[in-house]
Image (cartoon, rainbow, N blue to C red; front, side, top):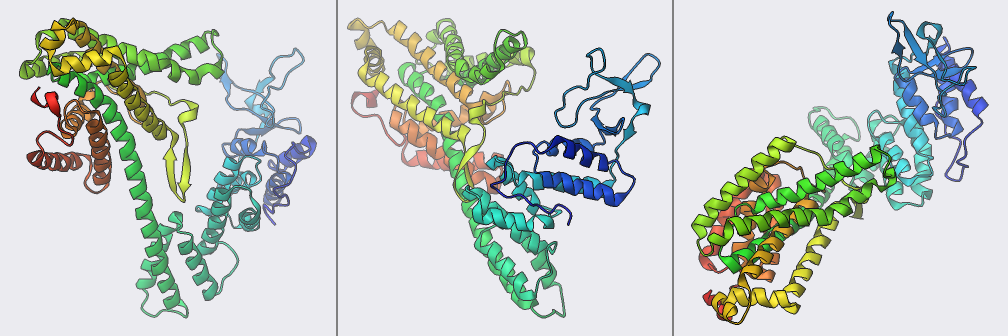
Length: 561
């Protein structure tokens, strides 16, 4: 039987006999279709994980027969007379085949016999890849193979192996997907013939598993059944089972979507909090509306990109090991903070210090600074760049079935909590925090007591700018980086966080940031991003009518500032 799998989870994972594999590879070049099919079956039965790459080359016709041996040619070369030559490699190891002089063997392409599979054989080879993954020692590979076997065109030959995995695999997620794919294969009719009762049981099991992959197929089947005038025996029971399964799966889908929306809202709110912390401090201290704060976030993101480029250059030049590449993100953390803080410091000493307690003038001036920064960055980098997330930030953890929490968003939430704790300690237990609070309460009194309010202003503005830079550094993990990203996506929402939370109130910024982030992501799926912002703005305007000072209004002497 084609693709009969004779190995099990306990099978050894060492390479199978190379001589036997090469003999089976030669069968792929036979003129007899039955021999080719038997060769493909035999390759899968070896269980050798190198076969997956070989099958990819087979599907794209990169395998050839030369001197009774299958060789690999990934790319041909031409001479000045347009003759095509083939550099030959071993299909299993992908190492170059050497000639007598110890160099890679290169021969005329016409001297090779191409192994060119037809469409059916390409499909079989693709299915064989997934069957090979079912016996991989790597859980992710087994999971991928089990999932692919249940997707169209379903691999009916994998049913026995999937049954073993569903019962014996050590990883719960692999067991679940293997069982799910079993039922999907049977549901498609690709497996053994089923009685009407067995088909109803398959549908019922898919519903009990809350299989999201089966939902569109069940809906299609229900639509087909509802259009039949004279229904055969068992059709009514099957239709009832479909409706029950669809209701259960739809309910689970709603739960999954809600969980993901809330979690995405938490991570968005965390970025808004990092942005709003600096805004709340500077506005409360100086009365300055800094409309360039979004551009400070953008500077942090581009500083991260520059560190990525630096590491790539160092690796390409041989001055750094490729294994150190993921460390670029850790090094970018202080650079993003310092770059944004330096720009904020320059803004304060050149422009902002002349506009204290003049909100309208500060708004216009910082808006202009933001436009200048956007154009400078656009001239240097263009309209869009890509920052690659480090290896540890890829993937996620599944807390319940189908609810995946990306590592990158978890990291951003933890970063936000750490930043809030750091700022709280800075403001409460350090000398500079005491001076900032004193200056916010009464600038003249603090100055008369010897506080250098000018230095306090410079430090505070630079520190708030650095926080925005950290927000940009974090955003590169989950979002795109463009010159106008701060102005388009963050500045308005950040001011809303400050206004709703209460100017200068740390706990207010945290609560309003998380609330606005979650509300945005909950509304977006049903209305779209633009209408979500409009609805959010209406809600906030209505809220301010009842609490003009925000969630946590300033108390004591701060209430009169």
